[in-house]
Length: 193
Image: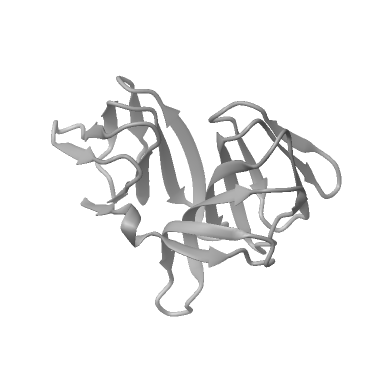
């Protein structure tokens, strides 16, 4: 198990793949041999209605962090309505997706993972609650949204995480991990089936 804290000062701003806005990349992993992105965690401000970037071969999870509503319409039918903070949607990155905003801009938290390598999942964990690391989990991350937090591993080892920083746990210990201090977004990356 390897635990790393990514401080917000190290986050990188970059343009969207379609040029329609900017993304703040919290952390990503690129395959050494090919240079292909395997997964990325980021945040973005959606200021107006428009298309999402196309990510062929990737799956996405989007969590509403701030704002009064985000609607996603998918090619071929179907939609997701994120109306409250922490509502989230899972969708393929390679279908055309169009976003609409309700009553002003929104900020979202994004997970993008290569479908051939990983199966991503997201949990919203309230302070005082726990999340379970499943067998085979390759990566888990914790992002504190409201306040500083303490993350406690199953072996009772505690890690302090400042508000706005990202905790990255490689090959995490299986079992129940506890969160104390703030609501947090927990990302799990399991191997693809």
